[in-house]
Image 1 (cartoon, one colour):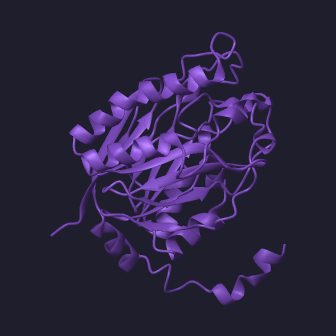
Image 2 (cartoon, one colour):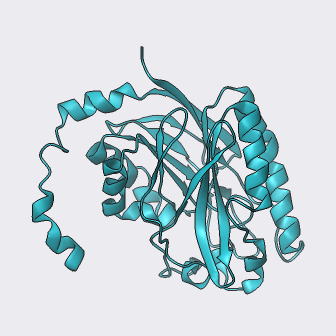
Length: 290
């Protein structure tokens, strides 16, 4: 029997400017905007759902202002994760929840919690690669680099890895996720046209091919005030281990993107392309020294 999984991705715009609403108000409004779409995913039989990077707010790294630290919460003790655990249990749906994480005072991360289909908390991934190199992407102001490695989570439906936004430009972590057993790698993102769009459907399908797993790439949509650093161009997609897009969202619409895929394709592809057999890790040591 094929090992079929129904995956879901939510791409969403943020409609509220901090010039008009308080930071807590924006967080609450974004959560409320997501809830009916998350419920829709559950009702449509999505088994693994992923939200976009820092889903419950704008991409606030467009400015450097410590007011956004007030939106950070502990994982899994925070209220957002607790809410998602109840929803996951209700729909028997795995949910990957990217939020601003506060470990303790001064220890803040760009993270994603992984919740299993019974509502249990499986663990979290902390974004490893933190950009601070383009106007409007001032992430080092807000986040410490991740320190939990590249974990893979055994969910009810599949072995899941997480890579967050800028991480996707680094093939080393993508390979480590494969070596740790990932069958699907989710990459929640916030990225704009004119900067990375030409790479959006190039890099991650290449990771899928090189590692023989599925990729699920999520990007938000719209323009966010007052910064307007560019258009978040959506186009969230699922990609199979052959590098073929099997489902793609629109460029500018709030949307639930869904796809059904067969995990047995992973073994089929890896048996054809024996990249893991033919690796030469004993020759790669210099890479980590440079």
